[in-house]
Length: 477
Ligand SMILES: Cc1ncc(COP(=O)(O)O)c(C=O)c1O
Image (cartoon, rainbow, N blue to C red; front, side):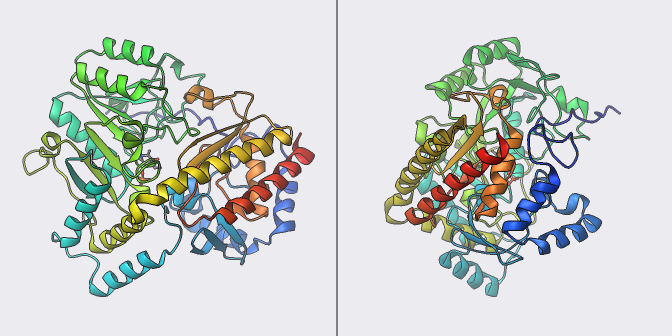
């Protein structure tokens, strides 16, 4: 049997396993800084116990990796605010990795979920709520002919790829370097490939992002650099008639926030069609965030199939595959299999429906606010960083942004996204957390805002950023 050995070490420094950061505070000093401002002793104790029971300490690696010296355990959330187990309050910019588009515990979602919980959470039959949610989905994503639900982004991208393979009768999948599409084997390739082993920038070598991915799977995935049309065209020529699906994040959001170059999406779509390959937009991050109908609405380019998750549920576990009727109709017995015990369960449907109702209220006015708040936040953060003498690059799409310490003025693809100072960013996030702004210490995790964030929250955030940049200059440079 052909199985792959360990993947190359990931590129971002995970302080717990890898070499010490080059230019940061010694870790005892870092810990002292954390303790001095905010007492987080309960989090420390919980993490100590968790590591003896759960591998790594939590049921998702991203929840502990990069946190120095230990992750913070949260107890409750309300609107844009979080409270940890030691009673510290934070303004939340992680927002469940972008899922909590309406903030924590929105009263309408709480009510819908509580009501449904009293009536039953899972029947194993179709329910009317599923039709209501499909209707609402179509209203917000008019480019979709049909939609089908699942539980998380991983199952959505896995099923979309399967539909594309069935539709075309071909096996190969083309994905883009640095794009993340979840945890299944076909997606866990060249997500964070170290450039030393990742081959030519113009023709990257597929590399596993996890141990345990069969090498046979690697033979069915082609990797292309993103935002580089010439390279993509060349790769498609080389694999003429082989590609079933081209899957991409229409705004790259897992290696900094990187918008597509003008006309890039349109050109990729044309080349996909010329090659009888289906184009899949993975809108798990962008959907219901950058515009009601996702990046495809923002840029006016649609795909054959699309995948959705995160903000669609506002915190409840739901995902979707949508697309053209001719492809969606391939789902059925004896054709493309599709299903799961918890898919479209009543509790989740009720929560997601309430979430989308809140999000689309008053003719989608929240999306206008998102744009304005993001513009304000990112313009001011850039200015504050400049004033503090920092070389930073801030990139945004409505409702989300990334900040990197780099001399680059603009980051346009994965290889460029590596040219950043990870440790300095981690130090900044510690300072921010000490002062009450919750962000993930991993520089690839974008910051997101919710409809619960107010202008006053943004003002407060900017004041804290100003202080944090000042402290960073004093301690780090
Ligand atoms: C673009 C994209 N696709 C798919 C996924 C997988 O979603 P999930 O974590 O819900 O499985 C993610 C998760 O971060 C994502 O960012």
